[in-house]
Length: 77
Image (cartoon, rainbow, N blue to C red; front, side, top):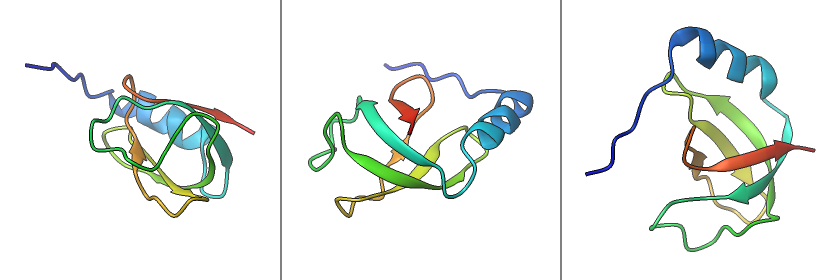
């Protein structure tokens, strides 16, 4: 069983400030067994950050997979 800790509202607010809608990002790594499209180096544009801290990105390759806090890693461009 995988334990996932949801970040508190203060941390989510900080993520929203760091990754506002329209921010360009690059994928560093993604720990998602269902990910078939994305690979490190892929780029996209942040759409929104939800209440669990998942950063939803409109990836240039057409994917819409979210980046899960603590599991997946992106960097701002």
